Each structure stands twice: as structure tokens, then as C-alpha cells.
Image (cartoon, rainbow, N blue to C red):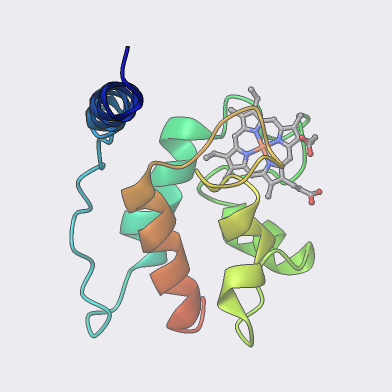
Length: 126
Ligand code: HEC
């Protein structure tokens, strides 16, 4: 085979390999969270815990107890929010989809964004 043919063959193989790498990128749709509207702990954050976390994080279970009635007090007393550097808050980054710290359960991307926005707004018991 001529040298130029080999280069052409490699070029075609390269194109084929490249074409395959683009097929599998699936982005999760992010529900838009408007940062100018207050996120409410009682109706938007606590339900995330009730649905996904209290099976383990409950009274007598794994700390923090994230039951709706006690979640706020426990998040505060365990220093799981840091309003000065919201992204470093454990309640946000421990079960984050991008984190490997907490293998038990992760937030959806939308839940993570809600929690982060709530912390950025001052982590209020509202
Ligand atoms: C299947 C059980 C299970 C579920 C469900 C679960 N967790 Fe956990 N979580 C644990 C265990 C066990 C630990 C402690 C060991 C570790 O760090 O992995 C822990 C640790 C944590 C910590 C660290 C606490 C500390 O002491 O620093 C946080 C924060 C946390 N979980 C938040 C959550 C949130 C928020 C959810 C719901 C989205 C959740 N967890 C769901 C089992 C669970």
C-alpha cells in the first residue's frame, strides 16, 4: 500500500472514532431557579429531605436528623450551612450529584440548585 493511502486510511479511522464520542452526552434539564425569589425552607427544602433523606436521616438514625420539624435546627447546630461561602456548605456539597463524598443518595441537579440558592439567600428558616 502507498504511504499516502495509509495516511488517508488513518485519517478516515480518526474521523470515525471522533464521530462516536459525541453521541452519549446527555444533559439533565435544569428547572430554572429565580435567585430573586425567596426559596422557602418549609415548602421547598424540607420536602426534598422528607422524600429522599429521612429514610436514613431520622430521629435515632444517621445524623443529621432531617425530619421536617427538626431539620432546620439540626442543620444549624451541625454547621452544615456556611452562608459566607455557600458552595462549601456540607448540606449542599455532601449529597451533590458532582460529589463522591456521600454514596448513599444524591440530590437531583434541580434539588442541588434549590438548596444552594436557599443558602445564598441566607439559609433562612422561612
Ligand atoms: C441510605 C441511607 C442514606 C440516605 C437516603 C441519605 N443519607 Fe446522608 N448519610 C448517610 C450515612 C450513613 C452518612 C454518614 C457516613 C457518610 O458520610 O457517608 C451520611 C452523611 C450525611 C451527611 C454528612 C453529615 C456529617 O456528619 O458531616 C450529610 C450532610 C448528609 N448525609 C445529607 C443527606 C441528604 C441531604 C440526603 C437526602 C438527599 C441524604 N443524606 C440521604 C446515609 C444516608
